[in-house]
Image: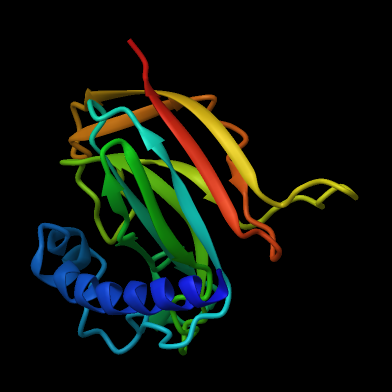
Length: 206
């Protein structure tokens, strides 16, 4: 199992490096321009070549939802170069997952980016419908499904989670394009340092 996670973590890093390059050349650039923050910015987060904190994201999804996954990263710094107005910089990075019919799986690296000057920190995992407008800024047609600021894990409780969500995709009238709404929305699944697997079942809400 450890060998598998190391192998998939390596594949994750290779894919993430390519995806980070794609960010600056995609439609996300409009928001990046607004934030004066692009892939070649000296404070853009850099891939950690040797992540050690990983967990497996897996489960099933109704094909009609056509979902994609993202990890989001924020800065913990008061330096002007790491902020846009009153807000810290923020990036949403596509998570590479493998699909086999309705089943999906992928490795999430909590330490997948190097802290750098701006002290980049993993924020959460989000799910969005394919075709949603996902920007480097805060316009985002997704929903948080995993968070890391977890409460205390009760003694004897499992750090791994299985969640069953009812979801619907709709067309937003604003710049987010398609959006997804899943119930229950709160609380999201929590990541703990001892978490190895977080599993979801996404069913289409009629």
